[in-house]
Image (cartoon, rainbow, N blue to C red):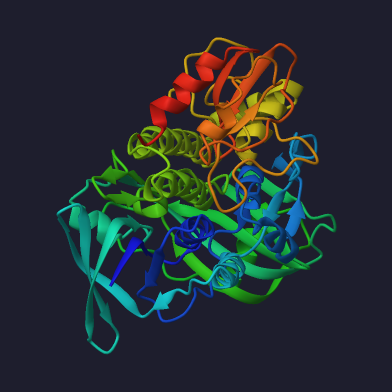
Length: 491
């Protein structure tokens, strides 16, 4: 059997990849060796930029309906508030963190994918693959031991930190495992704060973070001591362990009951150098794993999928040159590097030890996070609204004002999202003065057939199907537009 793309792994990243490909009419199969969807909450938050990108397919609405909107976070030290951050002033349709257990995220995505006519093939494992004459030949094994050989144009590994695809490609997963033990508890809390917000407590004994999930249900995460090299992982915590940490560090009077999930873990920070090897690609945890600080890991992977899918769709449908695919790793790898760097620093700061060091940390954080510009930067980073591709090979030379190439293009109320529909089209934000009469027709269907109002008078902008600016030029510079589109059109 032959199809365009085989997606390996049906977690949030693999499901997002399959949804994006399927809605763009690319032939896709998605497999997972697990017999059923994950029933654990695991990754807990979907950020604003992910919801913006998912709106292009229409799946953001059912996700929002299934989750809990939280738009603020407080940081405490010595039982006093030292910072209060809010997302409510973000320039987005989604000025909040959507708290939703990963199991619910997967359920919503899976159901949406089914409506697109694609079903996850479960209890199916990729055992090997080879490249042969411009295609990937993969062997799949079912739970009954039967095997199938399939041919695809591309293979995408969304199969997690222990990725079979990455291992068979021989890619180094460079990084380290932190020697700090952590506990995680999804529990119900009595006497918890009434307004849903994220609470982060810096205590002399360690950090504790509380994330609301649903009514009276929260996730508690806390560091509980140093480990030694090659030591076994800490045993699963008991409710007594969780309550002891709450009593010591949290704002008093909270009692944990009715546990849903209790776990211990250590933080891994690892990444591959290149997300592509010919016709094989990696996305999500198969390519990068991070500290859970900031809840960026799953979102980074889902945005990997949104970045790659439109490029594959253009190439698979003969609408764009293969050079689009070269930009995937060039754009997404630096984002993961940045996430690793920032989340690593946040974790180090939160777990700092020593009375003097903690005092200086608390004092500095209180001063900096009280400044409006710093709060704005922090909100943009956390929500991932500020993510961009300033050094992308898809950027035109900069010769006009913002939004500059590589920047997220403004999203205006009432306009359909760039990249919606069943064809990944670029969109031109420009007046029609002196426009070549055949321009829109000449680049059909690579270019949306209607112009949209420019962001500022005197300029014109070409925006990619994922909502990032490709070109910014002076109004009337139609040569810049045609030169750009000719560069990437499949001739």
